Image (cartoon, rainbow, N blue to C red; front, side, top):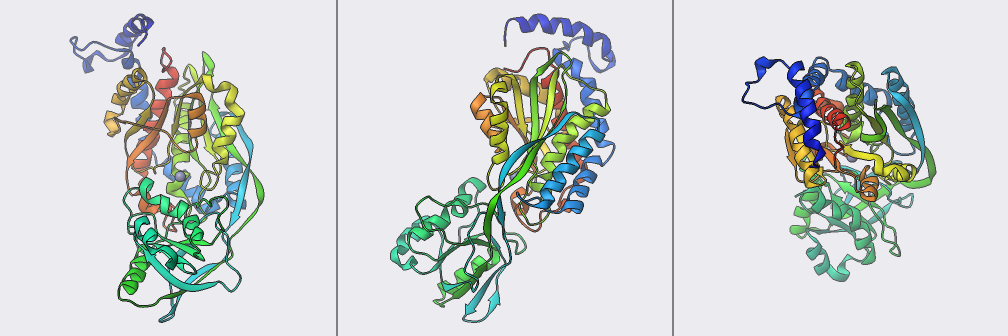
Length: 461
Ligand SMILES: [Zn+2]
């Protein structure tokens, strides 16, 4: 902490001692700069918890527009709606900032066992996958349980449909089979790739998600299948049964489409050029309604500004919400934000993303200096009443990532206790999995952190 902080805090102390009720403190407890924020924090919690506004807004978003895949009409209609609603909320400088996004379309798709008996499997093509010929691809399946297993299979992969049947451990560890599996299989001559759903076992819910083709390798179609079906194919192979599959996918990539990041602000009263950014990604996969991934994250960060506005809380610095486009299959929104604001990154005080669902909030992950971490730990004590006072070892998010990295900006992520990886990227990603009170707490937590960091006398460093 810098030397001047103690002097500023002393000034604040006098003010807070007058404005705060003395009944809640004994003289032995010395007041701190944080005391000036206790009243605002409890009002933000009270305002958020008093209604189901955030949940209702998320439900309306999903019910009205459905999914929001990049390039879809539904995403663009939802973007236009969000900008209108932000103006109705009284937010300032509401704007849409144009971004070109990839335009992948799924089309019709199916996966069937054709031998030893005909049976349909629960599948979802992977995002950015190529399609199959109109009649599909028919081939024997080869099930592998790990990369070592795959390597051991050697040339036997050639001409097969490879299934990576790897049980979910963590997203970071397991997702690599989805992203790099197609090109690994293609390099060995496989004709298509399947991956066990990257998530804990659900109720026969395959998980879509993006794949990444390696330059120079053939592009083969790839799809996710439900854990139940992956285990069934494994059992059949283990018994020595020859299993023949037919995969049909109409998937294709169209020319890039027009989209936009949605931006709104509460301008700072003293240092408007210094900015605290909060946000999530507004695009989703084309299954379910993207309520957990990441409509909820967008609504609670947006809600942070709406709550401040409702309570007439205008911080010294600007608070900006950004609903990023195209996180799922391109990250074009996050990159466009960096390109547009590159010259202003030094004025970004903090960037906060919510993209782990809006279940019961437990706190925030934080990445920044030790001084800033100590500050965040103090601020987090204001979140004790809603149980969200934990500050984890690292924070950030895909959308804020490009700017955070380029500007070495302190970054945070909302942390929650919930079944995110069971739900996201599936048909089951709908608003009914989310509890309105949890969502109200999440919105209050984001609002308090954003407000205090934007308003506190010393800049977070
Ligand atoms: Zn997401």
